[in-house]
Length: 291
Length: 317
Image (tube, rainbow over all chains, first blue to last red):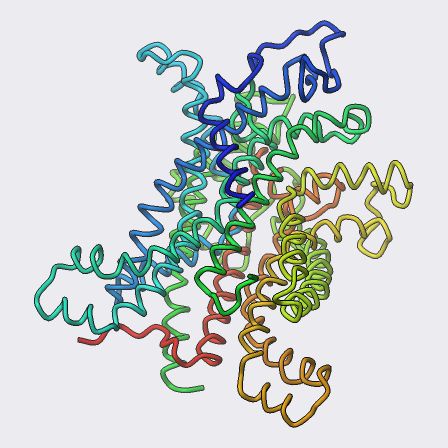
């Protein structure tokens, strides 16, 4: 329950970031007396090396997380994970084999390595395109951020659907043997109808569980990429970039608030998703429930 | 091995080949699409157009990509995995394999620790079921799992290295106390998953008839837990172990970065950022092959343990 409340707060903060933030997240004050300030009533989580308000940067980082996870869930989770899983489980045969073998290899490659490679290669290429966008569309400085976003989502999605689609497939595999599917087939229902009306409802609970247990990992990908400087780049705020600024051992020794201020919200975020995933598994498997 | 099983195995392996080929071509093309090439890195300050041209010709980078790929594959079949362009005089294999070995050793240690903690924790939580201790235990490890390694590392380095002075941050090889911290950090996040899996497994075994029989005939609780429950509950853990194995060789990027460990994950990042084509490709092929093999092994074991999973059967009718 507490987990749900926290997640609602987190996503709410991301959604309404301009209202929740107390300062402009990108506006720094470089004078010595404004830099690396400890938390105070003026700056709730202190300021970073450029004199920016860390609390406001954290709020905008939540927005980055929100946008990233939503984009990955919609494309990789719903379209690929659910769609391909249903298709593979219901159709069987070569469709199943092809989808599962591709998934196997995608799940099998050193994922982080490939995501890094994709992100690094395309990042290095976006300069000209961002410039073109800025010249020819209404986009201004956001052009680059948008492209970076597309790149990290595009780099993550190919690897994000496999787990979910496996869960969906195995459930669909079990359901397609049931009498009501057989009955639907006998009266000549279309594949689409059988998938959406008869198999989907049975698959949905497990799909939600699969998604929620993968959420922390998906959000974590963006944080890790940004930490390495391959995700969204400054000044756009991300938990990864704030943490990387505070994670130098000497910085942490002298100014622990930079690391901790950004780390605690994202740790709680991952923890909340972990708890939620755990609780959902319990709901589906009452035999092993903790309650 | 049943004949159906052997056929299944062959089919799986045959499927793996085209998929690995496609994947390797995509990676091959991908890394060559990046601006800047190994020759830039190789020449560095001494860069001039003429020398660059000559080197590109020498390495064959002036050829069209499909052609380069065919050449690479031809060499691969003859056992030649290519050369490193960052460490000239070394082949890709000479760069990759020693680092894979370092990462594997650390990975095995971390895995053993994770299971050594995760399995008892899972058993404990299962036996404490119905009390507040069960959710508390699991939640504790889920909280540990929620801490990103790049947050845990600076904090723990600060506590153990700077405050307590127990270790220092230099790399002294695998058999040195300095690796305790990195190995511990590598093992911590996995414990929650192992414990949760073990817990569920124990609980599903606990209600079996033979467990009730064992209790009924007056065996000590301890004996029942150890021999009847735990032993049977360990069976499904094969999957977890099997799927964790290939991950051992790929290393933990952040641990290697923060602790200056000459492992494969750090090397991979370097090879991507300062392109070293053959090294990247070797890494991807090596890692993917391991994963595919482990996947097949786990699937086979599934089939052996649970015959209801009718692997690889096409839908009849």
